[in-house]
Length: 367
Image 1: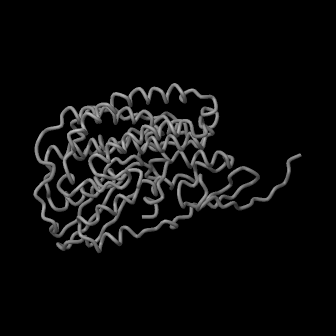
Image 2: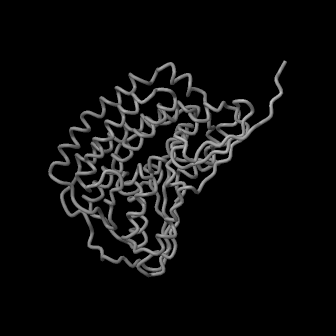
């Protein structure tokens, strides 16, 4: 005889460890089965878009670091591309190559956090996470060489980058690249066929390709559903059209596919960095841009493939030293639109895994 139960409401967050920041989920449960879910935003709202309208174009760059603070370099890049498009600024070749190297290093660092945290939630308590944190620290050492910072770098500039890399950077980068391929292989040996990981993630939280497209999902979450869409290939920016790399995809779009997509994309980022480092030309790293940029009246939209997905900036200029309007297209927010469909019918323990597999940063959600 089936027991008669009544649904009840459970709040997860906004300070629960599994909420990946100050994010709240109002979950309706029938026993341990998820009946409904309501994401609640706003606990970390910084008003970055409105702040940007009161700052100079150059003064906005540090604000972008605080969006997805795990991917600050990519945030910088998306913003300066929008300003350069708006103002018609040409970037020197060496700066373009340095931007690609930094953006792809940042992608690897972000995926190491995403995969490590996801595996921790699957039950692999801390060991894989600390392995991946170890490699992320080496990337942060490289970023510290060029910017002096380890989280919010403020390295990109309108017209290039803030400064050239020091002499010790390229040798250190070469050592890292030589080690990282082996470490990714080590992750695979440790995890790829781990029975607990397979049991917790295979077939769990499936996001069909059609639903992912209709929800405007992008990044690894979309590609794990089998959709071969990457801004670096579909709408190349900077100099990405010069590099040879593949777009890994999944088959059914479950949590396991999302985990595998990020691991496989690390290998592709290593390929891009190796090509960029080999082809790095000499020359200036910044165009001659006035301190106070004053673009002509108009609008511009620029997008990049950030570690979370499509990150874009929309700027409107009224020919002043600050944008008339600044709007951000944050992948963390957009990707959350599919969460409800992915979790209904699964258990509470599965909800944590599914949510973790999306990989959000709340600073980008509550911008």
